[in-house]
Amino acid sequence: AMNQTTVILGPNSPTLPTIAINSPSAVGVCDDLKIDASSTSGSGGRTMKFNYTVECSGSICENVTKALDDFNTGSSGYGTHTVTIPSIIMPKDTRMVFQLEVSNFLGEHSYQTVIISKLGYPAPLVSIQGTNPMDTTYSDELVLRADAELPEMSCVVDSLSDAKMTYVWTETTGKYTGSLE
Image (cartoon, rainbow, N blue to C red; front, side, top):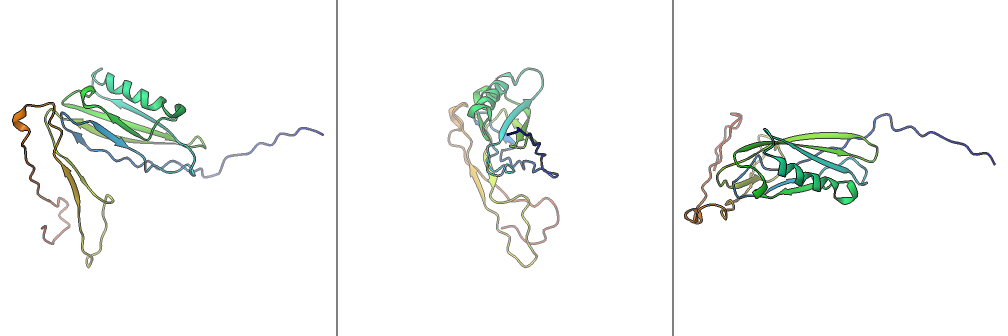
């Protein structure tokens, strides 16, 4: 019997990973940072490779880079879709640019960037539930729900431990003409 080799070409329109990142735009001085890309898709149920990087001025993010390197080498070199950066290693009052590269089993890559600020003061953690943006029709009721938590206060003075939170809804596009209650 004769050996034969057959070359199999990749698809004409290969599937690219679709990255979905859930992360805050800012974290308070005592809060850890969680970047969650677990809703990323585009590999037909097969394992994807996740690679996070960070940029900020100078070498002040060196410890964050080391932590990301540990996440990236986990899972037999495939990295992890969700990373948690401890507050203690993030420099205060810093703007950090995180980039996530995701590769699927076809070797196709997608990239997404998020900018996150590490504040020098406590800040509440607020997230609006649902999709962004939310679409509705004129005759439908639009219901917004938000989760809000007081920030972690363990690294600041005790006088802030009884802090309370007040919030106000504001529509900023000018397209909504109803009332905000």
